[in-house]
Length: 458
Ligand code: TRP
Picture 1 (cartoon, protein in one colour):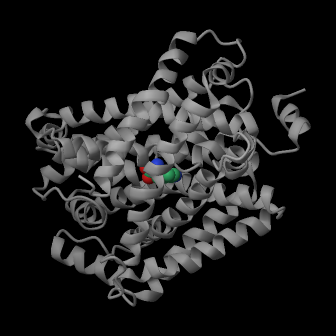
Picture 2 (tube, rainbow, N blue to C red):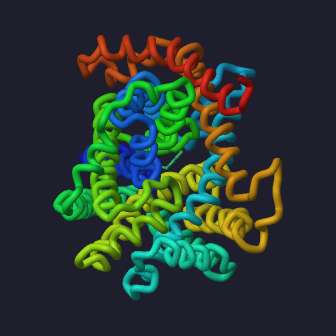
């Protein structure tokens, strides 16, 4: 009997069928727009190699333990995030609420993430027609502004992305998410290598590498450390049930700490390669380093338009960004879909359609943040920024903190050890002991500090 049949036989639930599939799907979730604009520009402007060091420390001390715990909890119960936490809660304790916060966060993130992904998809087509390729950053910003401030285009591209991701989701775990991410991840890697080779062979490329890697320890301040921690959360898709949901499709024989370690490492390599693809070219053509959407949609098209065969490389770059965002959106979609299927007894199709419709409805005000709703401010934020703020600064760190407390203080060491050694089959006790120490004492403390800071308590 294959593993898949075993899984299906036991629970009747779809699941990942191969070790590589689990790695591809989990990596697909971690790799996203965060790798392409957040990571490289943050590294460059916050002290290069020294920021990398801080980011790595945050990843090892906080990111990895939470990721491993989430996958483990999901695999133990083999259910969506809400049901998983409800089932593991001691009587009368409301841990299910952490799962609820995760589902809400998934919706909030989807509302703005699908919009940015929509711009990325739009730029593939606009790149093909040449309409956004100009070496003048002013013209490039006008082209970008005309896309985001046109309600029809802004909503249209967002819906296009939502429908595209929904179609993959309806195929399920093994035939949808696993199959697609196993194809996308190698393509992503290849595209990155091609663009890196192009960028590194431009005259003056060394300046970009210097920007990215020269250590400057004087730039490491308290707030930079907090930023690195926030980035680690977003990069690793933790704190909101994504990894729990994916974990629920993991096989019992999978070595969770090893898989999570590989995902973190590969995600880091991809982020670094993205930096190597972008900054040498930016410096070679004398552009300013910018961050966020303007790096992606203004600087990059202008940089690519400056080089020989620029149109080809620009389109390649946006295909790369589209591939990266697809894997991330699949994992975000799966959180509410799994819940609706299992706890609300919906068919997978109905659950996907419900999720898609809700994201379209809730996402519309975010998509219109540069046009029709641009003057609507809640707590001084546009809808787009509000969804980003609520999910990144509230739901995710709070979810992460509570997952640490749950794993360390409620779930407990014995079960933690049993699950992560696959009931004694893997000899990794020393690693498990250190992981447990981190998750029980160190990670929750650090996350609490970050969260209080994000909420501007100090
Ligand atoms: N990690 C993805 C990125 O880097 C984004 C993402 C996907 C995410 N799933 C998530 C972020 C869950 C937070 C939570 O772009």
